[in-house]
Length: 118
Image 1 (spheres, rainbow, N blue to C red):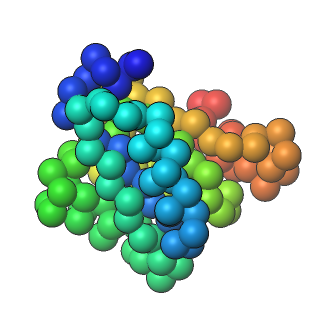
Image 2 (image 1 turned 120 degrees about the horizontal axis):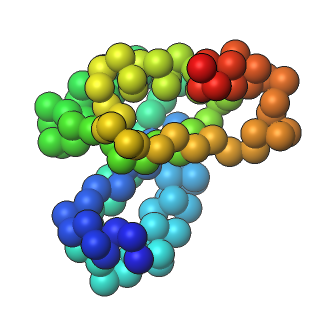
């Protein structure tokens, strides 16, 4: 319902696995049925340079900032990806960052958790 109040919203899903990208497409389509938004399902390969990916979003798809970022990929990349998002101004003021499985991944996320706790 939150998106209903924000017409023309864009949801970007980045996956390196085509199966998971298809699953994201089905879930978002179901959850946002009859809402005025765009869903961008994009492949993000292991060799993709994250900065270039963000530049492409801005330049080619007119996505200048994120309201919400959900990190659910390789937890070793959470900190560097968040820092890149922040350095490039992709998280709008008041934006929200969420990560999946914090308790289970707490040891691997130590650096990330220390960074966001500052």
